[in-house]
Image 1 (cartoon, rainbow, N blue to C red):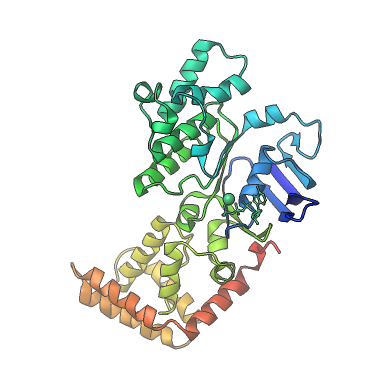
Image 2: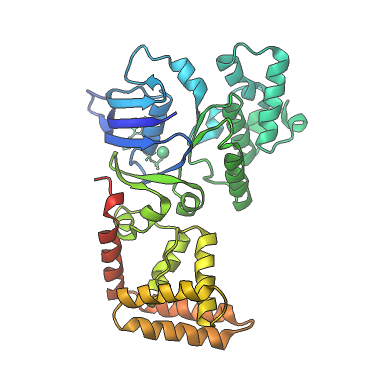
Length: 365
Ligand SMILES: Nc1ncnc2c1ncn2[C@@H]1O[C@H](COP(=O)(O)OP(=O)(O)OP(=O)(O)O)[C@@H](O)[C@H]1O
Ligand SMILES: [Mg+2]
């Protein structure tokens, strides 16, 4: 199901003194098969936008098409739409209401899959509860309100995925989970994505999460989409993101620090890719293996893009690398990062200017 929003607007409490325009003309397309991220400062309209996608908020201005459903059409079959587009709320714990976890998860099935008999429903509920990593027999008769925060969230997610929606939207699904809980949640989303769940859309404030998991992302600001592209495109616009009060992934912070030393790492900002590029640079400095080609390219790019300070920076790095061959490399790395921090200042302006200038095609304005 392709999602296309054109000039989507929405005002809470219209015609009242408390009117608040949350969406001011959202233009955005999300293709079937994507693992799509939505980021933006608090109050930028992310939740308002995603709640339009399964008609929890009805369209009042602009156009919105979700697969075959025209959401501006009052005759749209909203029940069928909701069976295909599942929504996990920003605080999914509040989605729970039934006496037992099992009944809670079953609720969606009774609504959307009326053709199923009791045995099929019981099987589907068990599957959904196990898919989110909970022990069905241990949890089925427990009140959802007695569960831990992480367990409640899993039950709420089970209650949405039990109907196997084609599009699954999760509004800040990992907020407040511990690192293992976050990893398990992302693994779960990847395991269902590409199967019955064709498209996953996550709203997140965590840039590392977006960089690691998403095929593309959109940046919301003041009720509009101001940037849209792959994580590599978006996070190369660091200056723009900082100006919007947003952050970049840890890998992008590291890349920025290295660039201040004249080392340009052309990365997609995933940890794997970043580490691979740094390793390749390191190996080339030591004259090892296939890394050399990558390093030469990187060194050449760094030389081209920096003033004459870059060769010194590279030399410093290579000296540090030689000194630290063996077990002292973390200290050497620390030194480089300290030096980079000290040098923050006028060079960062040039960096960000060039980053802002080169990424124009990702800019949705
Ligand atoms: N129920 C509501 N009634 C009135 N105004 C609302 C309501 N919900 C949201 N708003 C307003 O609409 C704007 C967009 O809110 P929204 O919840 O979509 O932002 P968000 O990007 O999801 O923020 P956050 O990151 O904090 O979750 C904000 O100005 C907010 O105050
Ligand atoms: Mg929100």
